Image (cartoon, rainbow, N blue to C red):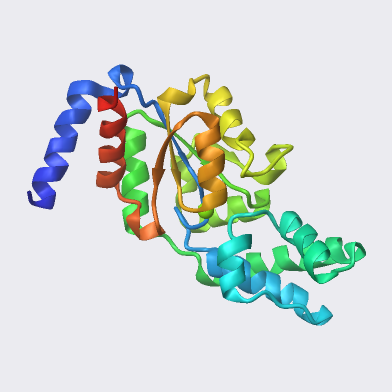
Length: 230
Ligand SMILES: [Mg+2]
């Protein structure tokens, strides 16, 4: 089927069922690796902040162990495994956030397929949230630079919860703020820590492997699959 036909089919489905009759009423997006391709930025920014102290994380270890965790969790892991003095956490964390923001300003740009997806989901009546383990400043800056902030009903950062992912609190909190049950929410996640949080919240989970996978058509298919699930 051509992409135009697929699009027409979804438009008809939207008209036929619409969010009011649809089990899914909100889409909760993870940010890094889903809406923003920022995994390398976090990796590079953390290593820049650690470099004055002779510490470095290799990329494989970052992807396998650290990806998707808040910086404060990563630093605690480095204190346990590599002897990073805990007295340096605050300084390293501050520098890491500064380097991250520098990279956001240099590298974060609007991506058409994401603007298209979120604008059409919004027009179809779905509530849209971003739930990220990032600090609030990074979250707000990235959404603004990507021109996605205008489509969001809610942004939750790791500063809005007591326990970051893999704990489900951030997703449970978004559901509560929308006044929705877990079964009415579709969560879009990309990595192990995020998927654990999403599954533990009880919401429907759509796993993507990169921001390139996040398209309007794929999200609508995921919503349709939730509706047709027993
Ligand atoms: Mg992620």
